Amino acid sequence: MKKCYFGGMKANLYFKDKNRAESLILLYVAFDNKRIKISTGISCQTKDWNHSTQRINEPTNLSKGVSFIDLPEHEQTKRKFIFNTNKKLNDFVTKANEVFQNLVVENNYTNPTHEQFKKRYLDELHGVKDTKPSTLFEYWETFLHNAPTQDAQNTIGNRPIQKGTLKTYASSLQLLKLFKEKKRFDISFESLDKRFHTQFLSFMNEFKFSQDEKGKQIKLIKAICNRALSDGYAVNPFVFTKGFYKPSEDSKEKVVYLEFEEITRIIELELKGMLSNARDWFVIGLNTGLRVSDLLKLNEANISGENLIVTTQKTKTPIAIPIMTQVDEVIKRRNGFPRKISDQKFNEYIKEVCCLAQIDAPTKGAKITRVIDTLKRRKHGYTTRKIDGTYPKYELVSSHTCRRSFASNYYGKIPTAIIRAITGHSSEREFLKYIQVSPEEHARNFMEHVKKGIV
Image 1 (spheres, one colour):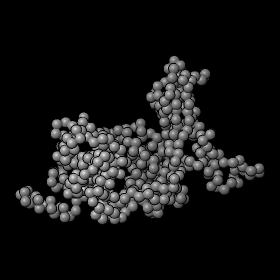
Image 2 (cartoon, one colour; image 1 turned 120 degrees about the horizontal axis):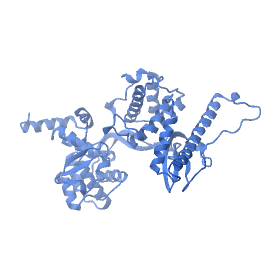
Image 3 (tube, one colour; image 1 turned 45 degrees about the vertical axis):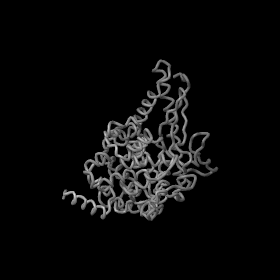
Image 4 (cartoon, one colour; image 1 turned 180 degrees about the horizontal axis):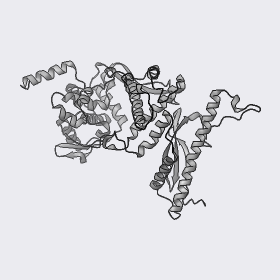
């Protein structure tokens, strides 16, 4: 077949994040002045990558008189891995060229659209896999590869799993691979027994993973195993017992919340510039219970009479939130909403605002702290961890404080069903686990109901 490149097409392989010690490899297909990024599902150590050949560096040739079978087992394994991985990468590039050329011919010798190319490429790539993945890692990688284009039964609205969630799954897979390498533990669907569970938790303890993070990793493994079981894989039954537990919810770090008196002190601060702007967003968040992904996108189009109408990014469902007095005052004073601000800057400024408001009582919690990257997954040598301790309260404040404060402050004052309709919690049980109300506050709420003659 004659090769036809109308406008030209190039297929190259690059790291998703070249600054990490290990990174996912992406296929970049470029034509008509636009690039398409497609995950290969393959990762490698960045130090082993040859940027010229766009492949993993091949081992040096064997010395004269030395055969492959004479090499140590670990060296044989390494050479086999590099050979097979480079072959797979070659197949990705070859397939891209083949699909592009076929589409050019089918389109009467004109370039396909980028949507046409991506759909055909992914369809043919999936069609090549006649047999299902044979190992837990292969199954996990196939899941990551297919998930962006497949509807998922357990998601809201049965839509594809969100990118952020898939990123978490990908990070968990890398952690399992590291565990296998460091502890020489043979990981398979069958080996997920009590011994694996114990050693994996100990492994995470070595690197100071928080209880919340350990629980999340166990939860993700269970989720993958549930999928695999429904696909006909033989998964160790221990995964589905109480013995394969997530670390106790009792010790889970909780986000602090601000009481009404503290919120009043924040409102009364004399501030200017970016601190004033961040403070006003904070006040809106504390009175709406919105996630930061929805809060910082508010604009005048969300105002409908006396309510804010918001279609939440996570659930894709519209909710109506009454415009509280403090929110109304901000909107009137600014003749609209505060200036746009990034999530990162918002988190940074509201800590400073709370510090100025002297919200500094010693408070138990978990603070994100920069620590040495003992897992050696990042080139710059450090990462972040949630570290338990007692800190000035303002240091524990984050964007999520808005949502937690709203739910906790209005619990007992407004029917729970109404608060849940705004926060989006699926059940009262989940809502009650989420809020933070002290025994003293429960007692206060009870007495307020007594005085009103409700009980």
